[in-house]
Length: 206
Ligand SMILES: Cc1cc2nc3c(=O)[nH]c(=O)nc-3n(C[C@H](O)[C@H](O)[C@H](O)COP(=O)(O)O)c2cc1C
Image (cartoon, rainbow, N blue to C red; front, top):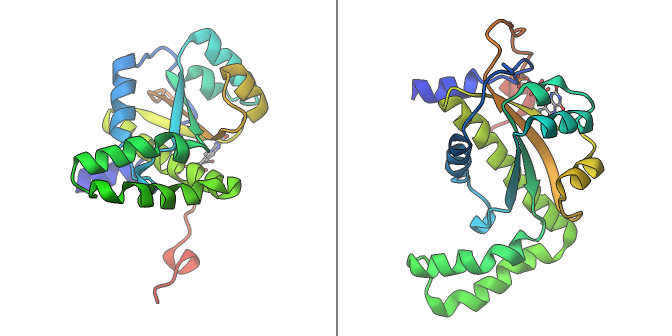
């Protein structure tokens, strides 16, 4: 319990990564698969990722991220993509697995399929669903990375049009954030964590 809370409360957005450190592809894949246990509406998992690890590509990505040096220094950058068509693309696999696992009887398939897809027909609703679930996936990655001794930095500072061209991402998909991931430069000290609102400022119990 204590360890788990430390992973969360001691997470910081790391500005200074050690540019000499690599993360093996297998470790990145493991972190992403563990993080994909994150919940999503109807388990549709509307996320995709492109991991930018190549030195030259990181330099190009830095320019798209308005020169943020951490993009080049991090071992990798995880480009999180919200697939706004995931409802239609994933629904059958989700339903098949639910039937196989005994969640629903096979005769309920068509009715449930229709109900699930209803929520994805409206483009604005589909965007919201895809972004919401992808953001939960992103947060999970940041915590799982810490369990592996790694640090992250979420970024919204990038030109999405250029990014989509650079990585050949479908125009209808959305990139809610990029996560730089790597090892903190041990010679650099972070400023203390900035102010967080207290419960009374952001919540109420009714
Ligand atoms: C979705 C998202 C986008 C962010 N984009 C950037 C960014 O482009 N550049 C940056 O330096 N920090 C960015 N941040 C980091 C925040 O500034 C940081 O999380 C916040 O100041 C709190 O600091 P902490 O994460 O160390 O607690 C982003 C954070 C989030 C969650």
